[in-house]
Length: 140
Image 1 (tube, one colour):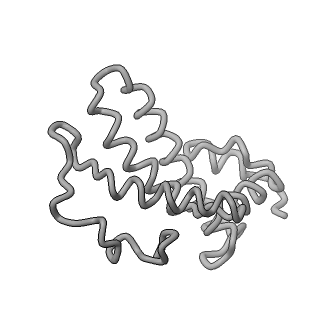
Image 2 (cartoon, helix red, strand yellow):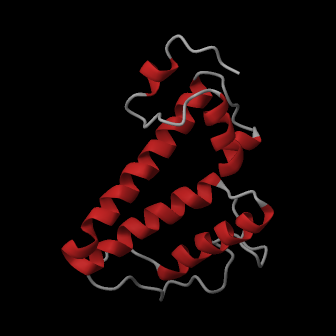
């Protein structure tokens, strides 16, 4: 369970209440939820251990936020969706190929995950081309 700088999970955080309603047209955007995960990323950045799950959740919440601005930020939202989906797919691929394990730091922290990708020449894997990139590679 991800905890913020106050040591609370999102569910425990007293700032996240049922009255934190999303603005009309934002399809479930929750500012407090976004800030909870941004807080985790900032804290992790200082420790050089940004949590992958916090990044994925931040991307997800931002994709709910950007549509509130109409077409202006439509591209930014679609780009975040692509990046989030590629990150999720790459993570699953690395686990399924035995490159990282469920309980490894590379499955938990962004910096460790990226190091594994680079060490194995997988930094261009995008979720769609994972198998073709991995085919014939000697895994480190």
